[in-house]
Length: 377
Image (cartoon, rainbow, N blue to C red; front, top):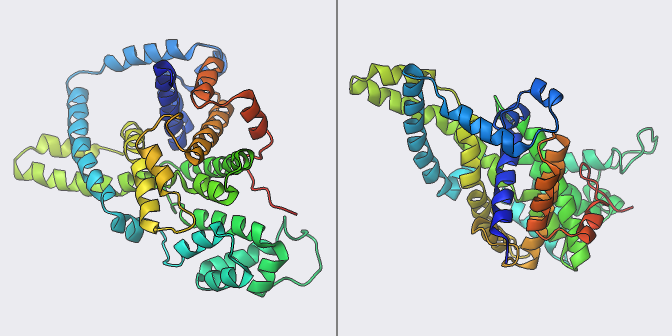
């Protein structure tokens, strides 16, 4: 049985990671830090800092500021209801937010199916023009080709697949499909895209390693790790897209009822990372599950694992593949938070222990490159 205190700490650390995805400064500010304070006091206990941050939060400015807070909270209640409706509509997600092609489920299944051969992959990739172009470009550059090589470049798709092998082909096309689903812009949270991608790659690589360690399908584990957090990316895009839609509608309603004071405050509102972080925590796992469910995969079946994450099963309750994902994402989050100096040693021990990450598991994960995919030679 999981320790409730461990679960609480793990949940808190995961929320902090969501903050960090948005920006370093936001994650630090939520802990009562600014960068200068961090330099001067890198060893202060986080629990003490958090307690003081709560005290500081309670001392809100009165009158105009309190009114703005009230309007913002009411606005976000409406915004979250709007988001809830959008999340319940997978067609909207696929048609409006993802660069989705009907051939992608075939590609994902081909990667997971043991019987898929070169001809099968060639046919699928050829039907996705951007992927064909990107794939050919990739295999003609390092690590598959020496930078200063004078050998003729490979232009034929079938020959390209044979050149790097099926195992590498699967890793390449999966990572390129995942990149294709990245948002073009998440302004003003401009560091989100790079950090999200760092997290996705780290989780995918760790999942692959742990699947091998546990005798599970490595490609399915890699796919699940790479795409498991797609809901985070979509939830952020949903919030940013819905923000002005809901705000403008509320401004019009306020003018109709003669509440120019409310309309004025609404007009001054900007996207709020506190509410965005809440939206990521509230909707991202549900969105990921709905995406996998909508894909209708036959061989790369990962929707049941995403459903277990959505339903917040404990590590002991989860299936082996979900346990692999839990440990992989936890280790990836830990390493990224550690690099940003946003996790204390005692917290890290609890965080890792909550997901049964033993010294043996750490030993396996320390073999993993967290930034780049390891291809077979």
